[in-house]
Amino acid sequence: MYTIYALVAGGQKGVKAYWKNIIPATLTSLATCSSAACIPVNIEGAKKIGVPEDIAETTIPLGTSFHKDGSIIGSVFKIMFLVCLFGTSLATVGEVAGVIGIALLATLLVTAVPIGGGTISEMLIITMMGYPVAALPILTIIATIIDAPATMLNVVGDSASSMLVARIVDGKDWMNHKEDLKEEIKETINV
Image (cartoon, rainbow, N blue to C red; front, side, top):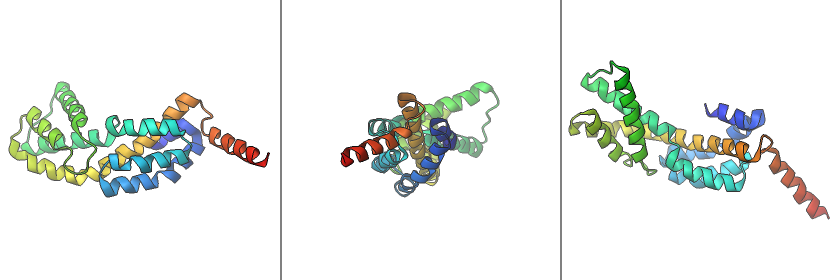
């Protein structure tokens, strides 16, 4: 999906720049399981993609707090695990909407710290779904397993989102501004 974001933001050149420069942030997110720890690496990668410094330094820290695709997928996964474990059903559209609403609310409580930052959200899920508190250790194990890939989705999504913001703010030729700046610097040095 983020490849499509990069395509919309910068065309084929955007996709190539995105995949070329997202690897360090991806590896950092997998190693640390912390979106906050990835901020410096992610900002540097976004700058290499061509995102202006002011946009990268604004959107990526904001994304760490508010853009949590991986966390929401993880919350839905945890809820569905409990549904299967306890044999409850989601027969109506309202119940499914309730799961999505609880996942959204739980995601707002997830912090940007590694493993354990979501314990509050896991307690919220258990409480709101009406399951016993004894299910918390099970959810904690599930959360530990899915934390690294969820963090990775959050982090790489922040980079793609910063590209979209650059496209909106600087127009469709935002990726060429970096090359224009390089030319201006070369001309200044030659003068």
